Image (cartoon, rainbow, N blue to C red; front, side, top):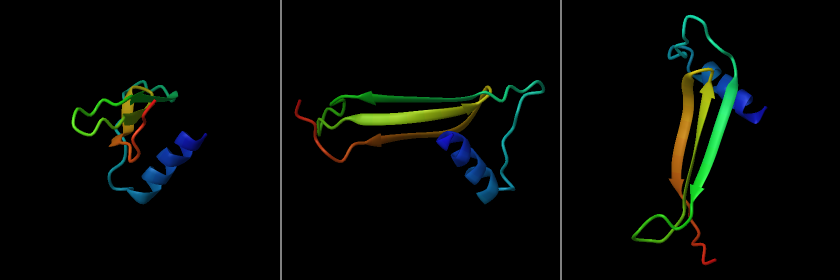
Length: 72
């Protein structure tokens, strides 16, 4: 539900951009999240990221290095 609200907020805030959908769109909302523990070779900080799809269309994504260092 939170992901659906984010998509709607995006559409409301950027009405001229929109989202391109296929001719036979699926309105399944899929979200994936992953974290890679200590993957940065320089700082040893974890990197996490997510992607959100509406049908086959990518609508949002982000990747971020965590601010805290995990020691275990």
